[in-house]
Length: 201
Image 1: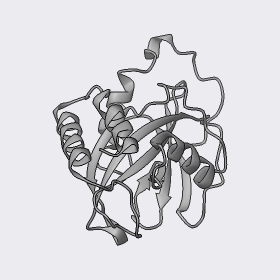
Image 2 (image 1 turned 90 degrees about the vertical axis):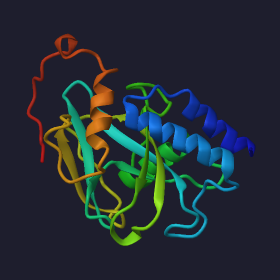
Image 3 (image 1 turned 60 degrees about the vertical axis):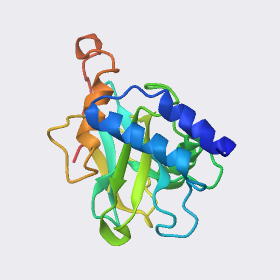
């Protein structure tokens, strides 16, 4: 196994699955990593398939918000993120995507700088027909902030309640991600009350 691929396999092995589906995705990903010579997208939009993606999920854990952009190609409300460049580490890709798509340097101190969640997902929209193996990183945001999204990637963006039951049309695994996130966030009873007005979708 190529060294950068072995590093990613180490990240995946260290993940604690949230449910049976994530366990299946972890096992599927480890088989893929062990049996492929290339995990990076080389030719847009989809070659080779599968390939590795870093999601950057911006959340405000205190005021229970998640920031989603209306993605031009898929038509879905999605977290930030994108393809991991050849031999790039997934966290470095997450930091880069935050700068490119939000115009800011993000802090990954909500749950740490390792991915919280892993999914294996067939894509929809104009790039349908390939599979993304996505590592979901959690970045800290402030629900009072709005971001200058990359207009080539997103139509607009806004905050939604961090609630798996009240989400817009999005990644099919977003609700599961939020439920897993809630298992590691500070209990609601320990949070300070919200004291300021919040813009939301």
